[in-house]
Image (cartoon, rainbow, N blue to C red; front, side, top):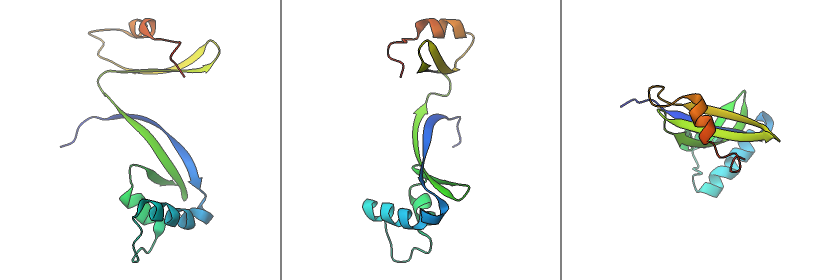
Length: 110
């Protein structure tokens, strides 16, 4: 059944197109997922580990993600002294943005 999702994360370049097959083969070997019938190691990797690896513009990226509550979410990240980025999802019948920001623990923000 389909449902609303909210995900935050980071993608990190693992290999440019020219090295993607070799790097993908190594990752598959490390994970014990290498098969002799693999026609494309990149395709095999992104099919078997689709939540961990993705191809964007022919380059291979590793995905680090975190599932969040799509109906009530608040994250604040320190980007510089006295400056923070935030993302919020909330029901506006129960709170407001200023209340969420007032409750934020800026000391724990990364």
